[in-house]
Image 1: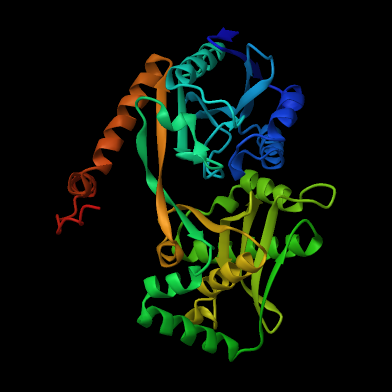
Image 2: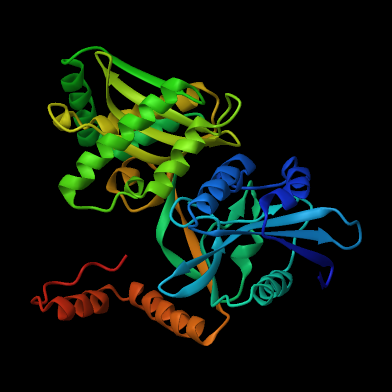
Amino acid sequence: MSLGPFRLALHRDPAAALRDWQELSRSAAMTAFQRPDWLAAWYEVTSRHKRAEPLIAIVHELSSGRPVMALPLCLHGKAGERIISFADLRVGDYAAPVIARDVHPSPCDLARILAAIGRAVPGADRIHLEKIVSEVAGQPNPLARLPGLEPHPFRSHLVHLGPGWREAWHRALGAAHLKEFRRKRRHLAERGPLTFLAVSGDAEALVIFDWLVAARRRRFGILGRDDILADPVWHDFYRTAVAGSAGSSCMSMIALKVDGAIVAAACGIVHDRVYHMVLSAFGQGMCDRASPGLLLVEDALGWAERSGFEAFDLTVGDEPYKALFASGTSAVHEWMQPLSLRGRASALVWRLKVRLRRHPRLRRLLRQIRWRRPLGPAAPVA
């Protein structure tokens, strides 16, 4: 279908979009979470488990006929609704199109394209795009200019690895915290030699991944927290991505060992000279006081610098350790467009939640009324 200077093709089968996707990906700007190898694993696993249906929008330039933009979307169900979203569902930290570097669609162009996608999917209740980043490979993300954009509750955390980054980090950390890091490292080293390793696409990577899964299961069980890897779909997805294909994987496993035994591990995506850490875990027991998870990140930063990476991305979240390391944080946003009466009701609830995020005291009050707890002092406004 023609939309101003563009033509839209919507594919339910990823294989049907493969040729245009590959042509576009060779020189396009994209985030790590829109890489073809990452998405190939995502679509294969979610389709096999019937968690989501692929919905890939390829946008062609009318004047040249070439593909200039791709939106890797999906259709999934939630609480009786049918929702169009990015290929994410908890595992993608950044949302952006795969886009030719010389193409800059206007907000009106994007709104027309998204409206056309909504009309082309019978029974869809709403479009909900989450974790929209401001930039893609150094150029503006056109989705970040959509009208009605709202801030996401979490921010992204990046460590820039340019000259002098370590000294700057030490200054930001402060003498007391730096002394504590050194004490923890000495404490851990008392139990045996410390070894850092990074592996990708081989049997050892899967060994480390399986250790990470078991460590998270133990810790999250103790804390009573939801672990994404307890869901068979996402366990299958991450293991598929770590294994890769033909001996190659976009993911790299990192681990810290003490006397040959793993005490902390993480996995991340390597993309565009940046390591994006997406999952981590550390062992329970005698090494707890040494905070092996923190020491793993410290060693990983040194490894990333030596490997020629420009940055180490701790990705989206509010975990306290991210603030210890990050050079800075960046906002991410979300956008919703209702397509039905049910979608309008969900959009109204979403707007209310967005407003509550801006008023922490009111949010706390409503939560305490719900649970009938006495009202304490308000949290500071960020």
